[in-house]
Length: 333
Image (cartoon, helix red, strand yellow):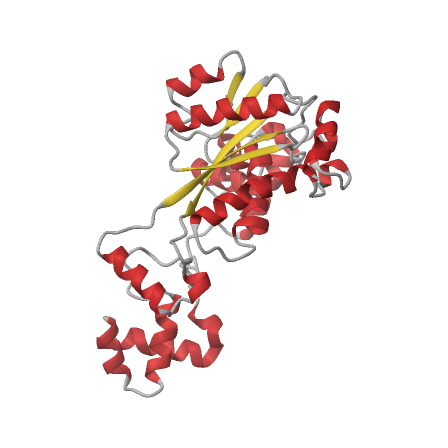
């Protein structure tokens, strides 16, 4: 990934190569604020590899003389699987054999191999790590909450409507440099883990008071659809979900925050966010934020009552809700 202070991005390298076709490399390099050697490097990579040559490469060295030899890595893995030895014991045995390896290195290698915990190894030495599934027993058992941050659409549409090089896009870019920002919209979503019934609102921020108000409206919406009680609320560790106000709003329900940096623990709403992005946010071009906000209500009805879901054998989420919701489906058909 390009670092924060890099003078050239992938697009910048493409422009550099295009300018060097008709102008001296030294002039273009001075114009773009890079050395002549850097400019020559990207021109030569483009000549050799094409557009792929302009992409970022891994910063890891080709040769690592101090890396642990492969035979030692295999020996460490064999000791761990066959004898269930700890990192300290493996380091002791290797030192006795005349091939010393530090305990810290062995610990790191075991983590890379997925053998850092004994519970991951069966008595026969096989790895028993399997992906765990989030299972719910009934509607309302687990409701997953999350916030997706998306850019606000300026009136008249953004660059997707007018093009990146258009006058409209340039005007927006000039406003950004002057400190005028379009801002963001925060999509607060709540999805029932059992039925996959989802409720989404476009709100101006992700503050605690906003999240609390959204939770109240989501409870009422689920209640209208036959899910009267929410037993467990699952969220990430965002500041709005860690606030005392949100804790009080959860009430008698159990508030479960996922392990930090493991969004898969809240995977059902994360998957819903991906569907929302692919099939709604970026599926068409929008000319204003009001237009997209109005269409969001239509999307909610489409997802819940018409879109087939793999968790219900191709039936929409409303098909797995209580009987009362099945009667409501006719009003949205």
